[in-house]
Image (cartoon, rainbow over all chains, first blue to last red; front, side, top):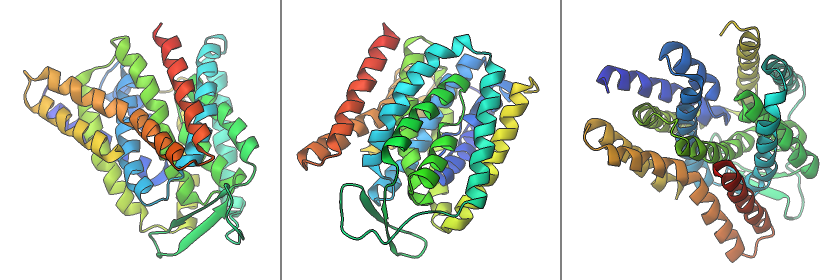
Length: 273
Length: 75
């Protein structure tokens, strides 16, 4: 493979890795359009390569935050159950629904989530009293304080993750952009813990999908390898940047990201990209 | 485990890209990156089971769901 092409792919991977580590998104919203429009891959090839990049990005960030206790593995394992089931159902149903309808619905969800994160204050209760199975804590890197929180609306949130998984598999976009607001707004998980738990979950979802593409021979190894290297490096950079952001800034930047994602999705729905 | 798996995988990927004849190394790196999160689920679940943590059940169910999903998809 041409060294210049490898370098370009590494840079794309790095950019997405930084975004993924900061906000708990996979980066498919960056990878897939860039790989198809700029690098000329077919849609299936782009998705396969994108999944490997997403794995590298999420695993890189998750390995850092799991070690520090910020990513909530327990919650991630639970939510991933319904996400995975939703994704399987979504993949089966997607063939019967017009893609533009799915994308418009997805964009509406993203805009609603962005508005909620802007106008609805974070409802994380740190006065959680005694410990129980729903109480967790982590050390905030920004100020060194130990933050405790108690999960709320566990079962509604878990059920809604099925919808997130279905929408993600039907549109190929944005599991993290749905799950992070879901955890933060509905389940009362602090934004930093929510984004890093999402990072942990996204890798699992992407790994399952990537194995299937590998088995079907759709994966381009050179592209996947270069993207993965860049995404891993980017994820480490992103974790260092994230440590300097406070929670309110993260929510604000995440809201902007959601609106950008919604715009890209609407452009895709209209056939412009 | 996440860090070891993804860093090792990326290193093999880099080696595979640098040495064009080492396609096996390239594929080994990609596969290692891909299975790392799933290995992490197994390791996390095993740890929770060992600690008799209530949340271990979630890990066990998730492993079953992933396994069923992969079998159905690959069949």
